[in-house]
Length: 470
Picture 1: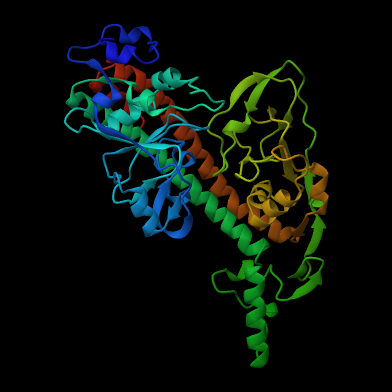
Picture 2: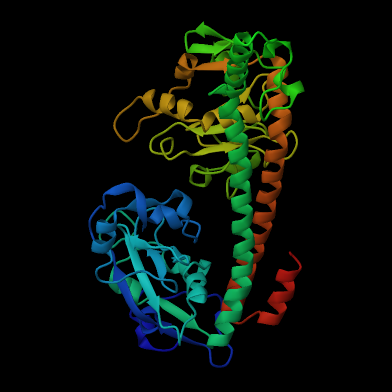
């Protein structure tokens, strides 16, 4: 590593692959490769329902800025927060402190964004550094290891501006940077496509759940038709008329009227039952102490989507145990409020996994399909109830498992429950396949990245490896 400018900062401990770099590859400080490194306004912006996006650290935890979950600010706030510099395509968004510090993401095309708290804007010199290459360098395991442990005099991990500006950057020739960025970007695009596909499939399943078991849309439609037909002296839908958008054989399974219950009106013949009557809560799973088994920690519990990013093997000591078909819900603050929920479909047949003692494990009793619990756990009604049921001191509140006996579930008759299962299982199956492919692509990317950016693996060889996954 040449030059004292890099050595001024924390020493960069490099794998042996960096000992002999290709010709014309070199090291520079980040600020030497950039037009500027700009800090965020140190104030909390007021959020609104529509307007430009404000980028927060939790919005870029995957290295991609996701507009579908980002907050927005008013035009006035946007102008105030971009008075010094306006983020544009070619700039990088970088989180400087907190849980998700040290992560970079590109500013999306044709998207107006401003910086939230704990964010920095990096503007590379386009004639020296390709912004896509720089983004991947900053997100590389080499840099993650380098920045680990920065405290800046506080208990929270953070990077101050002098530290960020002095970060070491490996700078290959620009054509090589672009080729490396293209290969890794192609893999990233495939991973992102799989992620979006998973979310779309899951959204379809959850929409059907809400329509049938929360809003009772088929029953309401059939009820409305029966009123019209009764007024006109024609046979009612109970004699077999179809519901718009629902084939007649399926429509015949739904009633055309409602009856009173403790939850208000519910479809005739359905029942409002305490959750433990139709779900097993924290069911017994056999796993001996000292046995190595798949482990899902709280950090990898998804806030969106049903699949965790990473599951590792760890020797079982103490924690909640689960099997395929179970749903896991974080019961402690702030994980519950953040939506940490998972559907277990990543284990081998008959395998038992384990995780935090702060999970609640749910499994529907037949005839409800296993996926029903996940759809319920993601519903606004269940989450609001769980949050209101939390007890304990401030900052360590949790949901007692026994409180779930006070939550009422509207249970449909067997034919409708089984039909729901047949309709949504293919969605979860395709989402699981997309998850597995995404993990394979991510593993390939993470293997190629350090070899490419060190020059150990040349572009042509990496292209062949990437093409094999297409």
